[in-house]
Image (cartoon, rainbow, N blue to C red):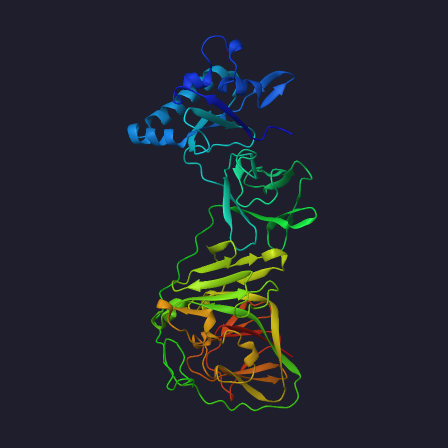
Length: 501
């Protein structure tokens, strides 16, 4: 296998900032017991014809004891480090000028706690690249064990051909946090330029399996016969446009219950109105169904006066909604500043929608971006891997809301455990943010479902069968209802409901 990354420790050096001492031993090199930098580069050429080198490596990282770099920074503001890099560059160009071609010679001096004072380690090879001044990354490589918390591994620059990631910096050009495969192999990333996708290979071949998951866009590396040894990797192009900051939202007012234990009907919304009474009736036969297919994460900044500081939704290993006290394999939340984040056993990490998670080899969990028309109220939609369905009868009109018994099993967030208030104050049901006691009425008809707004402050949104935005539902009543086609979705409060014939 080629020398993708070569590490050598030069041993004890009297003056680690003396370029000539590191480059070539004084006197005849024949009598030198240990190779120095010039000898190492001669013995390991980048290209050769027969035994004759035709091209040498030109990007070299020098590692010194961290204490010595700190002393130089304190005493000379780093002048000796800069002089060392410049002097080695000049010596390199002087002695290997005929083997450089058009390559730039670049040296980088870094500190490490793994070396003792007087020791010097060098690193070079096909997968060692030092960016030019001002060169911006073309790609960013990140890895995760659970698809929830991702950690940066390395950038890949436009002129960089190879990168090798693996167990540690001794066996690869970049170490991967929580690498699960030991020192048995590494992942080689091949960059053929900005117009070609990154090529991913396992080196040595067969050390473990690595394949692209077309659904998520992540590479999945796994050990043969050991499902627990699994690593996810994503290669993302740098320089994407930043997500615009959300516009300022009007403040809301938390309305207390009139009597303890009795819902007064008021909802935490920017404008307070009492909902219209529901005239729902019930039929004995169920022929249609309504399914909860997603949970809409609200913009908590709208409800800042309620004291809400975060709202979190946890999924169990089965990817059903985690019950109280049950460990969650994936958590998705939003804070008071409308920042989305993901939670897992590996920690917490800010995220942006759209995003996809595949925790613990389970099926994919999608976090969908919301349309601009919904962005004032919602940050994202969490699509549930296992929708919850309830049958409904045809030929009758029903109501949905905090006080409505119909479809109560779909109001899975009707609990204080999802909402956290400032100062650890006791929380009320998360449904009190954005969902009225009587939010809307629905009735199955020949062309779909007839939807009526029962509260003047209840926001209702129509999404199509693929959860794409269709319309905001304004005026709609029992006499002049809004027609929702069968198979389409309605968003009310935190709930994304599909109405099926």
